[in-house]
Image (cartoon, rainbow, N blue to C red):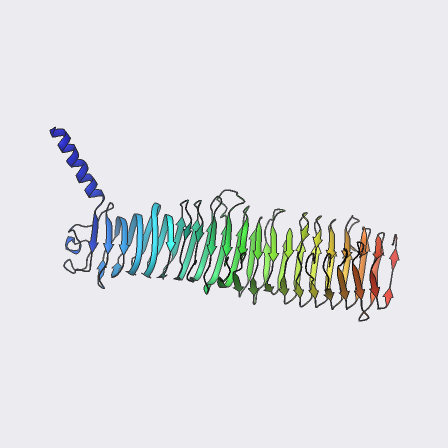
Length: 488
């Protein structure tokens, strides 16, 4: 019996020691010093098994060296010191943190911040992250490790360098209600099949420099992981500089359910696969450049409701679904998949579009495209280029060059203009055709029609061994043909 009583007492005392809540409410009896027992209620210095609460004060509590506790809750006052490490929970609802470093190593349960000034550097690894406000002035690193979806209300200001990583199996959604403001933000999605959402549902989000890495290279190859920027209708974000990387993942999506994005600076795309989609996106002054060892599924999408400048991209797949291209545009498709563009695009300046792969490159499938400058369509692979393919009202006001591999080796490539019934294409400038030992160039073969006005000339710069088919073509311009080989 004595053994039983002693054992129960030991267990009780062990439990009490492992679960103490120790509070500082601003008393200066201990001189505002962490290491003084008179600063705390109950009068004991917190240890690694204790839950620390700081509230009801405007005073400052100071510590030195490294302090280890189980959890921290702060709603007021100021905590100043060197390194504070928590093993389980951090809740910041107010107050000021001036520690050199606030950390939660791997294995943490929850981090929540709704208010307060965090002047410390942060290194947080937690199952759950709830970024619901606060002002962060140091270098911040958050890593979500848990399997539940965390919906963050937003309202935070991050003036330093911030890294947010999702390595768990649940989604991490930022800025769902209130806008966040970031100076430098690195978003890393290293999960199996979850997503990160930035500016998920709020108006007025801002990021000076955003870097997106959808799989940091160390994570599993999984086609389900995604990153979404300004996803839902009504959400907005302004980004000054953007770099995006996607590795064997589903992709990075801007405005995919109605939100809008404004990008004010340069974009570099380093990718190996997946989709980079710009819906409801306005590029003000930028150069979009692609770099990477792409797999054949890598896809770049413009539109709908997008506007861009200075585009120079080379990727396996390109979809043009409703975008205004304000300056000179270069688009080079290298893949072997067929790309069907919905159309509705406007090119306000010169353009160069090349099909370098063996898949088709189809324009104007549903809505007409408008070309206001001079342009070249170069077919350099063994696929097809099909312009004004299935829509009415396509026009070009400048000179159009259709180059079906004039300087290339023989192949099965072909170019088709206004192919299907009901499709129309008005060419208001000059039209120049080139073909070299390829299948040929075909106008209106399935019932579409084209009109060449009297604004320019209609000529072949060289047409060798291929078919030149005119069906449904009205030409009101001087015609200069130089044709060798088979013609239709």
